[in-house]
Image (cartoon, rainbow, N blue to C red; front, side):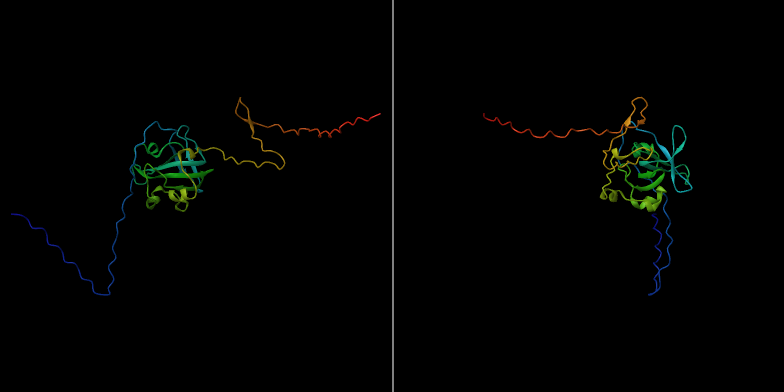
Length: 221
């Protein structure tokens, strides 16, 4: 004998003018992003962990020497889901693609970030591999007020191509040339690669132009 389905409970009728009861919405767990394309080839560089400091700045932990240094440049980053809910490490690299940074682990968020001497200038959801949506940017656990969508970056003329990504190093500020003197690039010593002082350009003495010669006139006797 076939079983009949349980009866559907009647829908309660709410009197006119009475507000609907509050509904508790259960918050969904953290979403992970899957790679949309396969990245082949040998990984360039190494994945280094980006750590936040108490003063709001950031440091990069070297994978080889386990030392901390202030990052300086534009980096790819991925936030990796760890074994526990509170474990979510952030890895960066100026050359490695996002898929190589993740290493097959679940990705909570991916994008690019620009840091200047350890201070975060901006970060975005620019990642062609994972294509994270802006609505899930809180999963990156980066300052939301520094977030910029990749569309806005491109509208502002920031073309995030692979050649634009830079590693960390000292911030170089070009020195404006002195008035009346040409800007001379510092020479480098081929032996140790250190810059050497460029010799001051000596003014070249120029002789004044010779006066035009008068045509000789032959006088008659």
